[in-house]
Length: 208
Image (cartoon, rainbow, N blue to C red):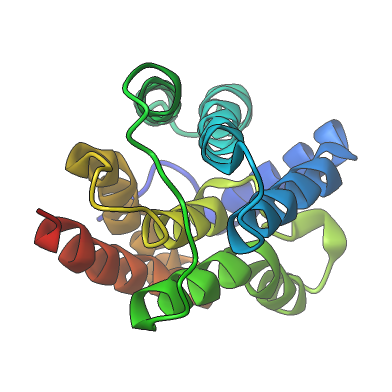
């Protein structure tokens, strides 16, 4: 599939984003770590806290990354941005109105996979990105679509049977779209997007 932008333009978006929003990257990373801490330690109000943070992450990606920074080189980013904002709204609705998002870490295979996916999105993905890009300015960090989608799938694996299945639709669509970056632009860590999407969908569709 031909993209309307070059490899240089693609990576320049991350460079512009990183220089413009700093230190938001660090704040988003700390919030992601905090969300994982809340789940693992079974803190009170963890469900609302984690659900709120996931919603915040998706709205941030939709508005800041897609609409503000990505859309100037890719008109389709306006659509991506709207979908990401919608996903954020869905997460907030499930958290506060329907109250179906319940998070817990049990140490079983599903839980351990969720933990691995979250840690990959939070830490391992950006580290790989740094070494591939060769510069901090072009590093794809947590708070950007691909690592955050991987981590989101991880959090979904830590939810109970009450969680709504439709929540995986938009992240799964992005996993398909985002994998093209791995193929075209050499963002090899994006290959885990499709892996996490498939595994998470298998577990979510098995829920009663």
